[in-house]
Structures are given as structure tokens and as C-alpha cells.
Image (cartoon, rainbow, N blue to C red):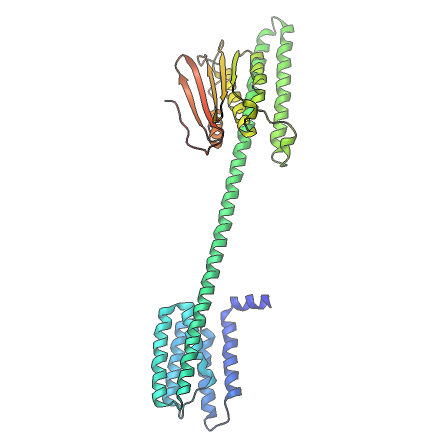
Length: 387
């Protein structure tokens, strides 16, 4: 039944044709034998025919039915109401429902004029006039209800369509954000590990001809750094496969800052670490952000600050925010070429996600400074940059 209803709705002329046939059959059944039976059946057929196109061409159907009604009033002898006169009310319903109240009002005025003329000229009982007007009024009321329901259905469909589009947009944004987050994590892990490995490999290559035995510590650092990087990469790549990847390896955080400083010192970058406040209670996501900012900043110092540079890391926490500051004494004469800028971009993105602000650039009495303020509870806002 539902399929039949949908099929008829998609083919309005089929359903309207069935309605037209039903009106004709009703006229055949209800018309009593009389002298002008053939004429009445003819006018019934003519009145019913325009119903076939009532939804496809509603104004044309209304004009035809109104003209045939006028012809019935003028030409038919001993005019009485026939069942096919329901076409007048059906077309009124169609105009109000599918075209609008203005078209229905114009047609209704024509019906009112015809009804008045019929009542003055042909009607035999005042009750017939009341019944005709009630039928027309009922058709208008039904059209109002149907139109309101159709408008509501259209509004619901529009809202559902917009909701689907909004859901698709949110999904696309979520995918982009996730890709950016994973790319940021991969950059932090790979850039840090590779920088340490390159520095150690260069150092090993330098001392190898003079003292081969001194190469062993550098190789050990390269090996341990590579293994740690592989572990981080496996954990990050598992994020693409399962929602439970976080349980495989603990996320680095503020607790790991001491180990990070020691690792950097082991590859030749002296780091002064200053930790204040209750950093153990910092939320995991914020703690990871602090760790990555420090990691990326120290990696940049190792790559770009040049020989003899030192770094100072200050991480202070209070009940409102966490302050992260990394400064170095480098002169920007490192052996690495200028980077792509993805590291700084990743830091800015990370700070924006955490709702904080960051300043990056040269500062007085130091080679380079990175300063980030990360509120414990705040919405993201715009970044600030040093001049």
C-alpha cells in the first residue's frame, strides 16, 4: 500500500484520472432516470474531465470547470445539482492547496457569483444554496489544513536535508582536525628523534677517524632514540586503527620533562629545567601539549641555535594556567637548513586547541624565545606574535 501511495504521488495525473472516473461513475449511479438523462451524463463527463489535470495545470482546470458550470447553468433545461458538480469544490480545494489563497479567492468569487445566479434563477429550495456554500467552505478549510501539512512536511524535509549537510560538514571538519592532530604528533615525534640521530651521527662521523671507541656512545643514543621514536610512531599510527590505542603506551606529559631534558643534554644541548607548581594535577591533554611544546622548542634549539648554545625551560603552574617558556643562547648558526615552519605551525595549532596564547621570536639577551600561556579552563582564542 505504501509503495502504491508513493507511486501515485509521483504520477499525479494517474491519481487524478482515477478521481475523475470515480466522479463520473458516481454520476451514473446517482442520476435517476429522467428525460434529460443523456444531457446530464454528458455535462457530468465534461465537468469531471478537467480533474485529470487539476494538479498538473490547476488554473487551466479551474477555468474549464468554472466555464462548464456556467454552461450548465445557462444551457441545461431544468438545471439541478448533479454529482459531477463536486468538481467545482475539488478544483477550489486544488487551487487553495497547490496555487495559493489568491488564486482560490478569485475562483471562489466566480463560484459565489454562479451560486447567487443559480439561487435566483434555478434553485428550488433555500436548503440547496446552504448545502452548496457549505461544500465550498469545507473544500477551502480542507485545503488550508492540507496546505499547512504540506508546508510542514516541506519544512521538516528541508531541515533534515540541512541537518544531513551539517552532519557531513561536521564529519569533514572532524576528519580534517584528526588528520591535523595526527600530522602534528608525527612531526613532533619524527623531527625530535631525527634531529638527535643526525646530530649524533655527524658527531660520530667526525670522531670516527681519530677515536673509533668514542663512537659507541653516539651509536647507543641513535639506537635508543630510534627505538623510542618507533614506539611513539606505532602508538600514533594505532590511533588510525582503534579508539583504544591510548592504552598501549602512556602519553608523554609534564612528568617526562626531566627525562626529555636529560636526553637533550646527552646529545650535547645543556638544558636548565625549572618546574614550579602542582604539575602532576594538570589534565592529560594539557600536559601532553606542554610536553610537545617543550620538545619541539628544544629540537629547534638543537637544530638551529649553533654550537655552544644552551637552553632554559621554565614551566610554572598555578590554579588558573600553565606558563611554558623556552629560551636559548644560540646565534642561529646551526648546520641545519631553514625548516619548513611546520614545527612552529604545529605549536600554534596545539596552543589554539588548548585555548591559550603563544609568542615566538627573538627576545632581548637571548637568542630565541617561545612563551605559551595555557589556561586550565578556557576556550580557544587568537594567537599573539612577537614583533
